[in-house]
Length: 376
Image (cartoon, rainbow, N blue to C red):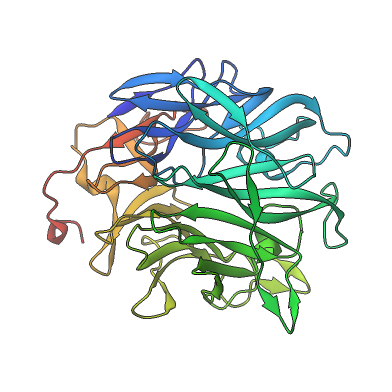
């Protein structure tokens, strides 16, 4: 189903809960700014912002009680003019100069979430208990930051109260904790996944030196696929037995320069390690973005920009399972729920493909019986 856009020509469903709410963001007219958006049974709702130009929901929101978590820019200008983590997810990718912080939305009201004393924050995943995870700046000037980033940021849990925030420990290497980190997703058992490393530019790269699981008070290193950066868990299922994300391969650092070469991974409690699940044919990069308790994994294969589903040890192009008459090409599968419903981003095919400037709406895919034998 084409979920449609707001007043712009682009939107994306980034997560879907078990009551079928597809949640993400949609561009405003002109495709320069975006607003967090929820699609409820086909109806689009603009969640607005905290006073700034942009807002978005990027990570798994697995709350079935009408609560949504994401980030929003505020009307306040950042005195240090940091680009902060939010910039990477806005339509232009250019810093706006505004402070950006996490938000929680419920009953039609968007409320800001606190930081650790710094200016900026970011809310990512949430669970059915109303706990939200993310990352937030402190007041510490961090020497591992790459300008314009200035301040240290730490992984956090927001809640259960609106103004409550708790920092999580980072990974310790040779007795020294990583200076920075971020929490990306949380399940209903309170298990949390995320990253830690150096400050860098506050988006991936060496900030994601270590892929982590926080469980029962322990910080567990999930390993990597051989690279030094971009080791990023994106989602954990509610049973806690499967974590998915992406991780660099060996050779990602040449002459001190980090060049992303990540592949999607699946980590299972049974194996205790990451497994590289590869890419679709002809591609070199991939990201696993969500997983459910059935072990179904969805994501994107690059640079072709094709959505995939991974099940039974095999990766399939999701486009093979939609009607041949569909005008959509599914370019990224970002979220999957326990019913197997998938949301993501598509493009409306023109001249046999997706030309520059194409209309790229959010989509919802509702499963029928899939014969994977016909899709190999």
